[in-house]
Length: 163
Image (cartoon, rainbow, N blue to C red; front, side, top):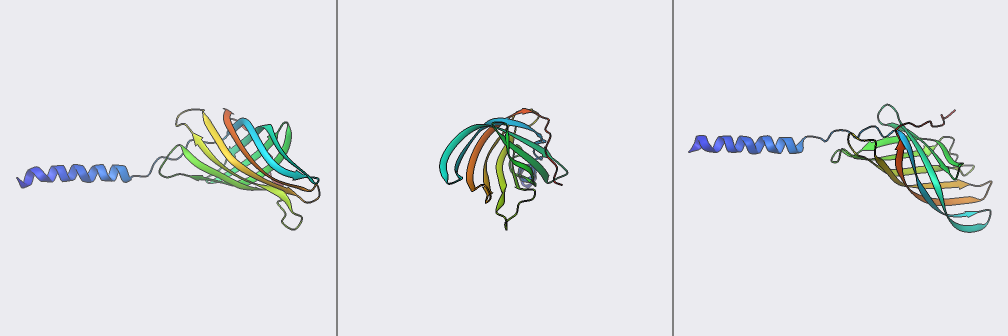
């Protein structure tokens, strides 16, 4: 009887190790994502809620680096956002991209921050971004919080470099 139980326990142990193994890393998130962005803002003393078309370009660099540009209706609203890609160890198709616009200046109260959930279907060019952009510009009197949803339309992107 004892010999029959050992193989079962060995199989249970192997199964437990397989389930505990870390998930594979998310596929490359580089690409151009297109969708909509909704902002609640005050600009020049006028409160508004706007909804515009958005293009988010993401370049994944050497792990865990990522860089992002955000354009709404053809106008750049956050360029050279430098940050990181945090991968979800439990789900190989998910991660988060977070960053701060190059040149963000707290003393001048100017710049943007970016945070997005990214989902890339393994082995596919399909992907989505859902996130938040905070923007401020003291000189122009802008304070905005924006949410966006976008789908990857290309696996290529060209982002602004931080100089």
